[in-house]
Amino acid sequence: MLNRYRFVLQEGMRILAGWLPHVATFELKCELGRTLWENSLHVNALYLRLREIQSPAFQKPADPALLTLMRELIHAPDEFALALGLFHVVTPSLVTALASHETTTFPNSDLPSVHVIKHALLDLRGQLERSAPLLEQATQAGKIRPAAFAWANEIAKLLASAGGISGEQPRPKNKSPVVPSCRQPFKAPREAARDERFTQRAADLSPMPGEDDYSAHTIEEFERYSTEMLAAETIASVMFSLSEMPWEFQFDCARHLYDEVRHCLMGYEWMRQRGMNPLHSPQYLHIYKWRSQFPPVMQYCLLTMGNEMHAFPYRHRRVEAHQKSGDQLSEQFVRYDIADETQHVRFGNRWLPELLKHVGEERPLKKYVNDVLAIWREEYATGKLTLNVE
Ligand SMILES: [Fe+2]
Ligand SMILES: [Fe+2]
Image (tube, rainbow, N blue to C red):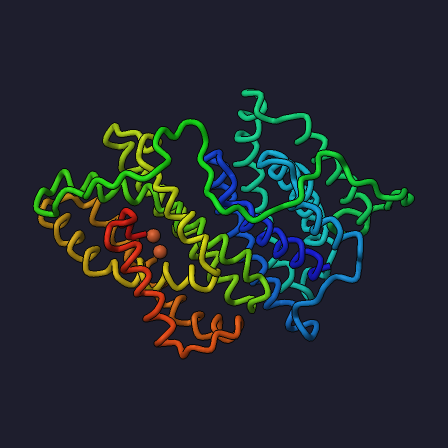
């Protein structure tokens, strides 16, 4: 049963990574990023427990109906259909299964499992609480189409065939499966979506005010933070395309992805405190599109060894500038960012050698990174694309 939960959460991460760039509604996109990261923590905790119980720790469940459910969930007709399938059908059933497991198993002999389950339940219930008002608002606004409700019904049927996430509920007698007309075969998005409240999606090539103009530059600095969703979207697409990489890579990517959502939200918070509207900021969506044209490993290299590696001297200058001006909030924001970005570069250094092996790249690491950085300098850092430190 632990393996079933692990499978559902891990497949869920992959589905959310695939969808994240494509989700337009900003609050839903942020929530899905958080769900993905929280789920990665529980997959990891289950993995640590499972490796004490079975070898190998990661095993495909033997129940074909559960495999079908998690294979189908991704083919939702739109973002609200996906959210309904997840938050109205799959996650509630997972919560029921975990809550029953928590109190049914041996409280002492199996305490390590109980510990994992209790912590997972805390986050999963939080996901249901946070997603409920989002889905309620979308319903009120008439954004949930009949196809989305039909899809959620379809997912509920597949879940019932699997006996719920626990597999222990009575399964209805099998009827021959019908492909629902609302099913939309999933295709990884090459463009990042933003909802209709965003007024400037494309590039704005205006250079940033110089760092010597402290207040003008600081506004732009935090406005750029508000666009770091682009980095989350690139990591999502990398994660989705490289889902056969070892678990630790998925785990690091999940953290990387949600860090970028948080950096984006940091920009939102900063701007809103000053009466600015981040929804009116340029979104630089061409950056995601530009990175998407390259193979996933190269996208990962562009982000970690290009943008992230090169941002540190600038970020440290900003800490000093905020300190000098006595702006403690901005200073703290940048310091949190530096801590996260240090990790991101570490992830890049850790995983690039593995990724090159994984895709059978013949160039040695140093040569590969230099070649990629040459493209980054030529096409990105020179201002042909707006520089965004991410
Ligand atoms: Fe980053
Ligand atoms: Fe960032």
